[in-house]
Length: 114
Length: 114
Image (cartoon, rainbow over all chains, first blue to last red; front, top):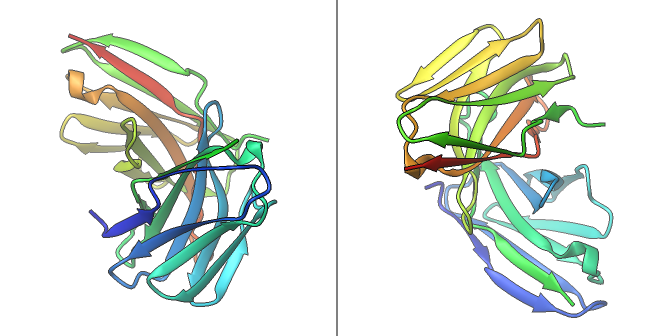
């Protein structure tokens, strides 16, 4: 257990509404990541952070923004949700002890955009 | 362009037999290779990893084999147990400083039949 929590765990929203997902860690790890998981696509990186206020884009960043104002929190925002953003979202951290860049994942947030 | 490929979406194995999950990659810059296991409604769990300087790594019932010249790795589970039924993701990462990103395959769903 890497001490990662995600909130909310489930959310249903309507197209066009803003949505913010939260990832919280308790161990002050520097690197944090947001992924989405979709059938037939595996896990795809949306954005990642390498420190407070330091973020960068991943493979599927369009339509998403992130913020990290504190080490422990990494927020993912959908400015105007679309049905194509219906997915399961996972947050992950990389610890300083990660020998092979292994990441540890939170429990996920299931988002449905109607 | 898929850099990490898991060509078998599903695999069924009898309890007690060997499960072999395969993964191919195309990026020669990958140095670290990882396997994750994912149960429904949970986050992926790190299982085992291997560095490109090795060809085998073993951890209990799980062994990962790497054939660098063929850009192929496999995960062997012996003996397979019903609790091993899950989706398995192969992932790869370059070494060296940077974002420490992982690139995932699409996953293979393993079903172990009692």
